[in-house]
Amino acid sequence: MPGLLRRIGFWLFVSLTALFLLVPTLIIVPMSFTTAPQLEFPPVGFTLDWYVKILSDSEWQIALKNSLIIGLCTALLATVIGTTAALALEASEFRGKIIVLGLLLSPMVTPVIVLGVGTYMLFARWGLSGTLPGMIAAHSVLAIPFVLVSVMASLKMVNPNLALASAGLGGGRLFTFRRVTLPLIRPGVVSGAVFAFITSWDEVVIAIFVSNSQSRTVPIMIWNQARANLDPATAAVGALLIAISAIGVLLSFKTKEGQ
Image (cartoon, rainbow, N blue to C red):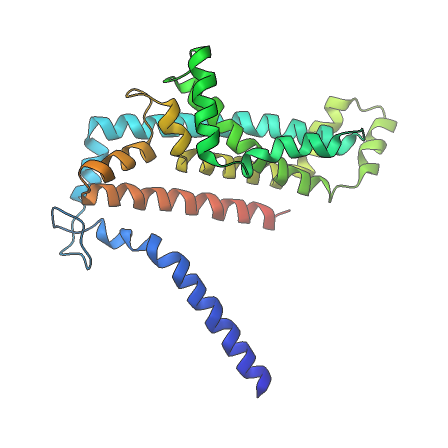
């Protein structure tokens, strides 16, 4: 009986915690289908007009296109750099390795507003402010640590003798990486790429500093709408962001399960 009460209490606590975390996020989903001209809860009626509006409005189309381009390029760049750094750190021992690892992971713990100000001052001097390459570079700085952590975790489960066996049989470094190491760490690489894309897709603080009217992303449009005219179209965009982020997380978990 005491064990049953503990299990009930545990699952009750977990359920209440999940509700506390999810309800403020998911509440905008039903609000995005309201027929009222402003956000209100509970929603009135049911319509898809707000989704049609954001998909047909030129400003939202540009923001969606920019977010996709920046997110995909960030995922690619961060995955290449993060995977390379993880392989180098895992394969070598040198003084200051912990310091190098700490520097690579520092964007995860540095206040985003500090990174935003620093990035703006640096990119303004380099002429990258207000450009898509600048946005991609700035978002990649935030995304690389996620790839690094994910790939290093996968490398911990790889037997190093496999690479030695490949080398002993005449396989070069590139062949060994492509045919031995990469298939074994693929779940970590894919998970890192997914989290890199989600990081870029949701990021707003650094984007505010680096972007201009032609390189606005979806989060910036939501921020501007929240400041000027908060209507259900903003909730519709938020629902789409939640859906894309959820799909990315599920894909990441699915990939790890297949490891």
